[in-house]
Length: 182
Ligand SMILES: [Zn+2]
Image (tube, rainbow, N blue to C red):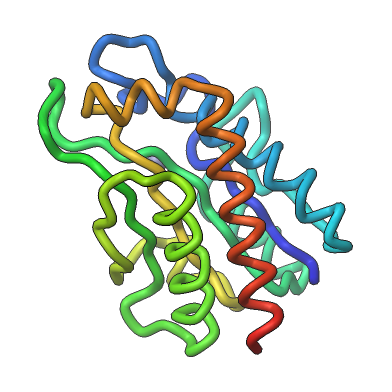
């Protein structure tokens, strides 16, 4: 399959960092995308990044790229935040569009189950949202939130290489499961 991986935001995107400033969300997202790409390529997929290392690519540009290339899947990788300071909100969640393609629902379920098992973080479930990358992409699309930068325990995980690799493996495994069961 031709798969678009989207590490959300950019390195300098305002506000997208942990309350203590130690983690920029993009650095987590991009590290997971890089490792996920390696694994998906080994599985025989073609992987294209919607993000760039030096700027916050506008959402319309990311979406246009995916549609123009006729991608088979769109997967957006994020870390979550709740409020401005540290608090107890924690765990992982996966989104599909509010009026999803059946395939988007299957992809979300497959990746989410894999992520929940692999990370061991609190399972917040699969949710629906009207995000632009889910609404305007013309292929099965999901957005994963791999833990909260605003939770001290989740943040420790988000900052570790081992956890990033675990997330990447889980996303790639979820894609493999989706492909097998279609
Ligand atoms: Zn984000």
